[in-house]
Length: 255
Image (cartoon, rainbow, N blue to C red; front, side, top):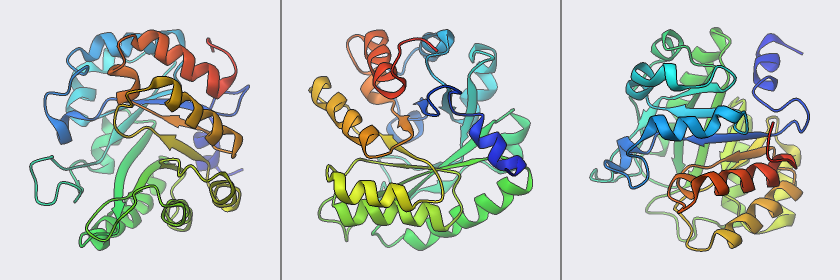
């Protein structure tokens, strides 16, 4: 096991070998996000160690680092775009690896959308970020999804499998993708990946029970955890929602 593999593995729960990540980085893209107006309170949700990691933008991390529990790993989001941009899915780097390291990042995250005219730029960013981060021994979470003018079905099983393979081939240490809903192809892509795959949540779901069923299916397919934000902090009962997701991922409600 290399030092980088050791650092990546330490992000995961030692008993379940899975991870629950709480991303709170939606403010760049969406502005005044419902449910994200009180970050310190949200960070307090992870104080029981139910969550292994949080993902913050650099400004929030700098201001709220004292609110992140010592037992929770800190991820810094490197990329961003706003919903007002044309197109809004064209992510660009807004933080460097060195700035993330100065902020105390245990890992870094970036978002890549495929199937659009800006795909080449985002793939270049992923290649550069993995090189720079690995030089400093920092693991990379790559959240990859189909999004753009060439995409008809964002959950197409072939496209989701391609997202997983893409992250694996370009050296991401953890790959975040939405669940396609097709267990056979999703399992095949996860099993051939060089890196663990986690389920991303996407938009807040109106039926939380249905969302939990998707998590269960993804875990059964070999997913190594979740990276879920809106479906927790926009839930009417975020603590209960978090506990339930932790139970589905790890098999228990407290770490």
